[in-house]
Image (cartoon, rainbow, N blue to C red):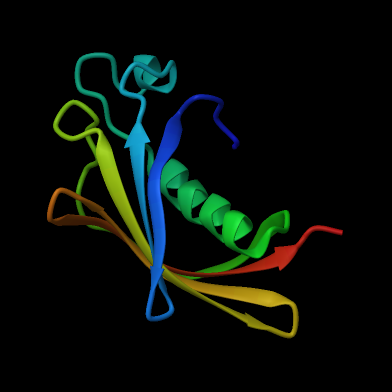
Length: 122
């Protein structure tokens, strides 16, 4: 976990090749003191990191982002509105490269859509 105590995994399931992971964001994390004190916003790069860590959990490998071909931030993730975030992803391995497609949702609002590839760290 890149940011210690930033989130915890509440549940994680696989259904028809899709992974659904519910995480609880720590709304009191130090990150929000600077981003932003009066209106906390989860940085987009942190949302992207959640998917990398999900791919690492699923593959049981340390990974490095190789490409992020399609990343769309669609709504602000404010931990004061909802501390839970749902990550839905599909992960396919081809020639040692992991390809991930995913969405992050807060309540029923899509916050992020991502298509990325990761390579194992030697």
